[in-house]
Length: 402
Image (tube, rainbow, N blue to C red; front, top):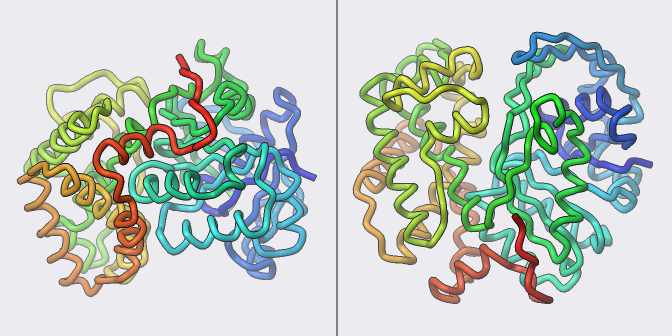
């Protein structure tokens, strides 16, 4: 049985499984990937994944990774349930899309004894983070479970057939909800054992921050939604023209607007007593790029790192993570701003434009607002919200971490 179970068979999940296999001689852990798909579909999709080519875009190294068919399975199969039950670490790479996240939380709580486990949520902050914190607070079975929230992915990565183009980030922020945070952090660091190559405890380096700080680290609702629904970019998508999302999708004019939204995000964080970095600072921390004079120039300097392409059609955009994950996050940010009575004029104008853009492309969906009923149950006032996001466990104070 596996020490680590990776939930989710997307780019990040497959990259993590292959990376764990390549570095197994360092950590000695076994890993398996469980898909949200049912077993037959997963078997078909993974048949070409037993021999993967791993191209590291930072070092230029190319490795071949051999995986066994037995390392792939379905979350919903009896074997998958056994893997979850016996794993010490469960890494959730499934996007923070409300109906998926809520279904997964329900499945884990009903089907698996979670005491003593470490559950890692990749892109754990923002949209679903307050809901996740409330889940911990209200679930007696989770009081001995460690939950680690990761600001984003451990990698920039793209899977093309059986080839993975990736780069490990130098540093990622993590928040730890646990009564034994040092033990949980050690378990996560063990999975990334090449830290001596960059002079850090692990690669990526896990920079521990407060839970409420992490809520403001991801900014997909700005950098993803803002680019995809920009009128000029929407026109390209209508015509089937793909563009590099983070580079060619950001004009100087759009960059100025995104910069204003970014600054309001940092302001909201400060009003809630949280620390947040502006996006150019996050890029510098994650990838070690030198600072530039403007938001636009900072994004242009990422040409060698960010290679993600836009959706190739309106239909593809409607079904993309850009909308399904980041529109709910936007609603969470709006909920927080409303809860403390903070006016964010640029964000409000942008939100209105986003709603108009969604209507224009026929992407209005009740799934975008699925977190709101859960958020509205958090009626403990501003200080209660802060405390929930800082320390959801009820049992005892979480030791301070340096």
